[in-house]
Image (tube, rainbow, N blue to C red; front, side, top):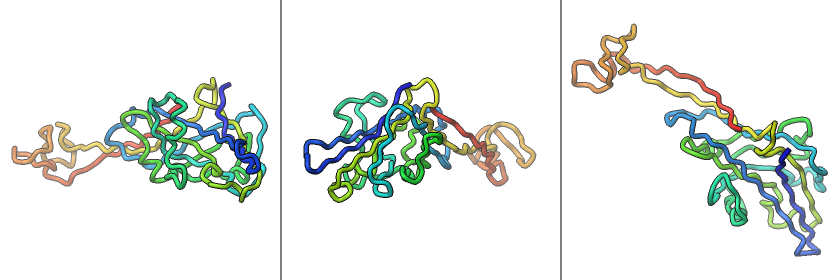
Length: 219
């Protein structure tokens, strides 16, 4: 198995002992139709038993959140990409926060329902990029200067099984008028929706849409 590791260590009495891990998760989502209307989406991970789970301060800023990334060459990562996880303070969050002390269970998925910013972050023409940061990473001084440590592991996209998944629910409208097929409610259909040629742009009736509801999962 291959793993992601979210880790933060802060020891104020030792200024050099401050460690932050961030993770990038990218999905090729160009198969979503250009005219699709994205209704909802969620990003899910599976916890891994790769190392010790550490949370020295439950019920504090021990949460995980998704942010935008601007990687130089997605999905590949370089050292310079560490600073490309949105702003250091108050980044735009793309999902509901995952409260580790309240929600984390080694036998359950870690699920991030995307908010409106997250839905807008889904790219219909290429990679959809998401950055994973811990709540302490958003704090200037975690836990008012107390020694703080947070660590957990989850399976990465290189794992053979249980990869991170982005599930996108969307609707795709198709215009029935203009398909060159005379439908029961149409008076004419000449294969276009341009008026002035003997058949109006609405086939002389109201414009109707057929909606196909589609669900895709990306690994």
